[in-house]
Every structure is written in C-alpha cells, then in structure tokens.
Length: 421
Image 1 (cartoon, one colour):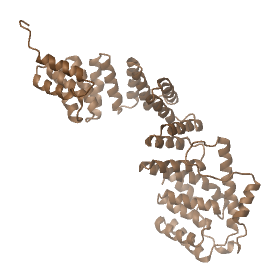
Image 2 (cartoon, rainbow, N blue to C red):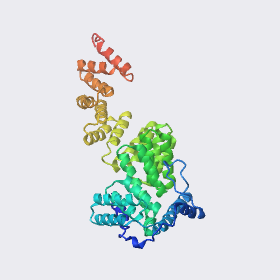
Image 3 (tube, rainbow, N blue to C red):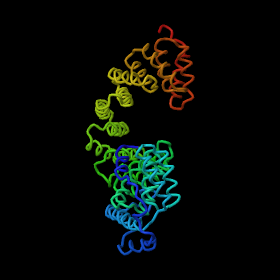
Image 4 (cartoon, rainbow, N blue to C red):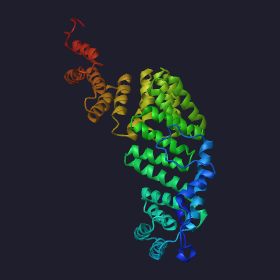
C-alpha cells in the first residue's frame, strides 16, 4: 500500500476506549438516522458501476457533503452505542498488534471484535487499517464503509473515511486491472469516483478497461469524462485520437493528438499518433518530421525508428532509411519488421549482400513473413542465386498481395536468354 494512504489511515488510529465512555443503550436507530438525512434534503449515497450518466460536478460535491454528513450523524449513533466488554478487549488487542505492525494477527483480533458487535465503528476503522496494510483493498474498503455507516467515536476520523475509500477502491481497481479482471476493475474505479468525484485518472482508467473488453463506445465516453474532469490531463486525448484514427476519422484524430502535444510538447505517444495520421494521409514528409521529434524525446522508441525508415523507403530515400532502421534493430534485435525494412533499404541502395543478410534475419524471426521473403528473393535474384530466389518467390506467391509480382518474377527466371544478349 502506498505511504500516503497508509499514513492517512494510521493518523486516524483510535486509542482503545472502554465501554464506560458509552451510554448503556443505542437510542439512535437507523430509521431516525435516515430521518435526519431526509430533514437535511440530502441524497443518499450510491455506487455507480461506470461513468456513464455520471453526475455533474455540482451534484458530486453535494454527494461528498452528504457522505460527510452521514458520517457525522453516524458518529452520533456510535456515541449512543455500547460495545460489549469482550468486543472492547479484542479491539484493544488488535490495536496493540497494529501498533506492533503485526497486521495479519491484528486483522484476526479485530475481525472477532466486529463479529461480536457489527456496529463497532472504532474496531471497523482499525480493521480497515489492518487490511489496507496487508494490501487487501477489498476487505479494507468493506470495513471502512461499515465504519462510515456506523460512525466512530471521533467525528474527524469519520470525515476522513470517504477520501480513504476513494484511494482504496482505486488501488483495488489497479490490482484487478493488472490481473486482467477488467469488468471488476471498472466497478472499483466507479466506486472510487463515488468517494472522489472528478478524478480524471479514474475516468481514463475505466476507458482503458473498456478498450480491453473491446467496448469502444463505452471507452470513448470514459475518455470524454476524463477530459471534462480535467482538461489539462493529456492521456485521454491520445486515446480518443487512437479511437478516431482506427475508425478512419483522421481529422478528429489529428485534433486530439495536437491537443495532447499542446499540453506536453514532449509527449512521444501523441507524436506517434500524429505520425500515423500523416502516413494514412500520404503526408510522408510530415510523418518523418513528426517521428524524428518523437525519437528525440524517447531514444528507446523502436517503432518510431521503424516508421521513419519505412516512410523514407516509400519516398525512395533508401540511403537515409538505413541509419534509423539500424538503430531499431539495435534496440530490439528480434524485431522482424525492423530487419525487413532494413533489407528493403539495402536493396534500394544496391547493397544486395547486406539485403540478403538482414532479409534472412527477418524471415527467421517471423513465420510465413511473405513481404520479407519477396525482398530476400529479389536480393538473391540480383546476385544471380536463382535457386534460392525461385524457392522464396514460390513460398510468397500464396499471398494475394504478392501473387502477381512473384508470378512475373518466376516467369522472368524461366524465360530463355535472348541470343546475342
């Protein structure tokens, strides 16, 4: 667990208090508590499952105030509660174990305390602390939510719970996402937004989970919500740009990438996206300029070097393409595309033996890499190694992209030499 959340919990650790501090009966019932909320005309808390139809900021702020009010009223209920002496003893034991940083045994003691008294707010708060320290964010959140409902003996602790819950649900969501449980992660991010509305990172993270589930429209809505929450948060612009680009909406995609670049002039992902738009728009010169900026920012950006070389090859500037493509192969020795494009560049400059060497590497790295087979066949053909060229053309002819070209080359090889030629 991150230090900030742990510190926030531990600052609120309750000193064990005996039952003599509490009246003998619980005079504030749930019905009377709800009645007090009704008198204040405040909405009751809910748990949205996603950001769809999320409340405006004004409603969110009212909701947070509602949680704080609920916490304060719950504290009145806690003040009227009398935990049993056995529950208090278990709480004391758990608290001392917490202080000794024996979180697992502390959780065991505190679980027993709340089993004896499910409305024991102080024990629930301490139990949330123990589970958080064990990085069991789900159990921690459940305990703190119960403490929020029932109240603690110190109102300032109850007021702190909503923010802690927001942090815990966010961490639980990150854990679920890492385990590829994307639906569960979306639920946790939504819970986080319940307690910390306006968190742009949570909205953005929901969008990334929807993308993993191939729910493009839901992802788009989450990214828009992230921008609405914080227009200066750069990441959702790139994600929206990617969605537009893959849908063929190049103008909208370009706008998103350029907005991200305006927020961060060294945002390599945005430059990459813009370059893809330029390539799709046949602006190869512009793409080369954009990609050079990207690799200047991130010298380990292998794909950027590959794209530069690819664009230069298409422009017929094969000699210029060699250096960035060699850089790509040095960064990722097993990048088949980098070796293939480097072979293409060598072929374009007439360096046929170099083309054979790099072409062989590309073919060895990817099964049925027909594009690389054609380049390698061309290099062998230029060197007069017709048997190897024939075998490679024959292997690539099954690919419809290269069928006509390979058949033409095979026919050329079978054509008898012209007399006197």
